[in-house]
Image (tube, rainbow, N blue to C red; front, side, top):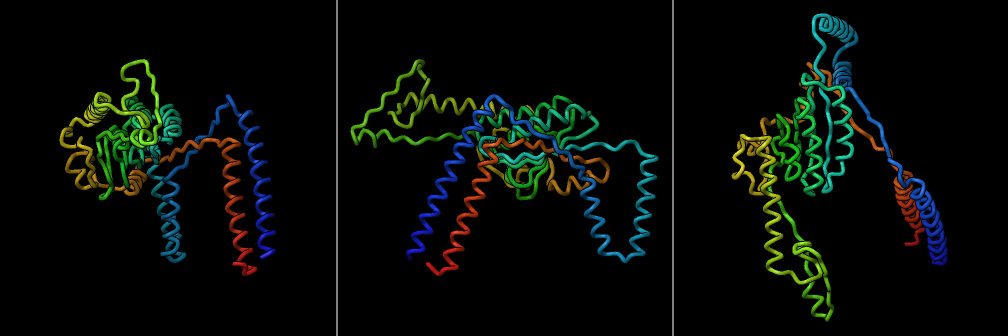
Length: 339
């Protein structure tokens, strides 16, 4: 047990020293990084090559050497003839959006759209693989505005939903000229929700007063600490109704075929039911759709990778180091049978 105590003391001192160094380095990095943009790099991958590699790997496993050689020659001949007699194939630009409550992926999305709009024409197509359960109104409003840029440029936009596009996620999805979804994907939730706790009664029970001063009758409607009034609740609800009305009008603008009062109840529907409600246009996964498009078009996947700041890299390094330290600590305990 004496070794155990000594080891814990050493571990605590080491951890304290490491944390202190990280704090100093992070502070210096913060001072140096003020006013600088993180920047990043646009990564482009041709998905046709990816699909070709999958096919060739499988063919190599299924065919004998001679048959594979003949097959490769036939393919090369067919591709050569295709290039000779056919126009330049259509281009498809594939984007991904994995949304959290703050729609944090918007920063990458805006850069990707800015880039592709410099070269895309109405003959091309943009495919968005979307996954989001929604979040903050203003955040998803901005994300939707980025997709609207594609429509405004006259470039066809297809949205693929494999798992979920609800609330703010559906606000983005509805902009697509064509919406595809998997059979059990979740869509809809065209509604608005807001909630907050109120501990005024608890504070009053312990004789704690909270003073709230505002300029403007409705600068605050509902609060966490103060006493909420019926007038404040009515205004809060009124604001929700206004936001909901704007949401419905936005959806109707891009999908006028919807019976909006029927689907704007806050409910969600799985893929097949969503198709019946005309929330989507076709039941098909993104994998199936892109594999089909790759047969007749050049398919490019775009991803804007943001450059991480020194603080973020230090944070990741610290987390990895801490995890390794804990693992080694428990390994030492097991080795010495101290527990």
